[in-house]
Image 1 (tube, rainbow, N blue to C red):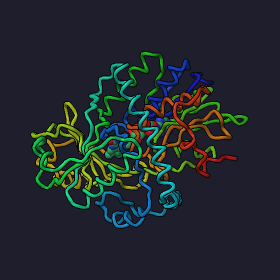
Image 2: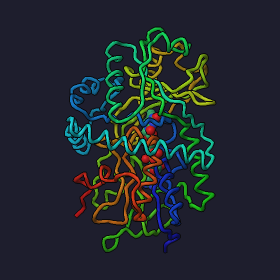
Image 3: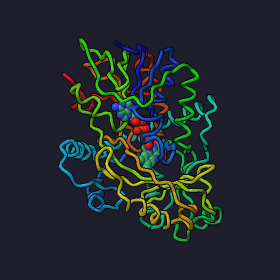
Length: 422
Ligand SMILES: Cc1cc2nc3c(=O)[nH]c(=O)nc-3n(C[C@H](O)[C@H](O)[C@H](O)COP(=O)(O)OP(=O)(O)OC[C@H]3O[C@@H](n4cnc5c(N)ncnc54)[C@H](O)[C@@H]3O)c2cc1C
């Protein structure tokens, strides 16, 4: 016997699922969220909280497979694959390589840019409009380089951003150090990205959940989807360890866990878990006054109002894989190359999370042809915080049949063969 029936059922209460629930509610729908753990406890918890419309450049690009090959076999390298036999991973890698050409690179960059530019604007509106107390900081972001090759990369990046109308400016190391005593002499210079922002991700999900709650969105935590039931080409209910939930529309926002939930429907979602790590401490003294991207180290630093976080690296190890303790050490060593104090005093809080990585570095947003009331809002790769608000709004527009505020075509789930259910 069904316990509940709503217009929309959202599976997963991360940054993406909560954004979907918020906009579905604003479109006039009754909404139920189901979350197997607690609100925001997944990958949206301990990430770096950077909102980076400047990061339109996707991972796949010309020459990328060769460049990453070296790092792949270094267990502390910034991009690593834990060796294992896994057909889905092999298929994912092939898909990734297929996207490593300039035509796809430019297409993907433009598609990421439209979603992130919209999300940057909508995030600020949402935070200010709903008075979300999440340490939102619209003060920009600095990319730093400690090598001549790194400086050349930043210079080339600045030029490519011009084409996407993203503002940036190069800054020399001396000027930077004068303004930022936390930087070491090794820093040769940087690229300033004034349009970027940051927020504390755990505060953002907690506050967005509260805004949803006040508007009447229902939430069930500690509630794991066990099966999805379909009838006559439509999804009708979700069977969970807390009973059965019926809805007219279903939104899959379960991040890296999405593939296993829909596998029994015959859908193969090409999402691999890209494990990343972070360390959170009290603010060091001196503390950087804005977020930093440490280019050669492939990691970032976010000074929050009350804490301080360093994080990054990418390890393809499978969902729910155990963390590699050496990677936490590698974060400190990486930050030490740029900063006088890589962490604040005391034992830092260790965290690892699983980025939902797709072979083309674009999310899946929209319905699948053979189950028109099942919508996907997942696969946000390294940019879920930067894309979640626009993704939520776009999903609500697609569910309710309203005019999408951005072109949804690049995010269609059925661009992948495994999603073309027959
Ligand atoms: C180290 C690190 C740093 C990062 N830094 C940034 C950054 O600075 N900026 C940025 O934009 N992005 C960043 N990211 C990426 C970002 O964290 C993710 O893209 C984003 O959190 C994905 O959000 P989500 O809502 O899709 O997934 P999640 O937050 O993982 O939410 C999915 C939810 O679904 C729930 N769920 C799973 N299975 C079930 C089930 N069977 N039933 C019910 N519920 C279920 C989970 O418990 C979870 O709460 C970073 C990631 C990492 C790892």
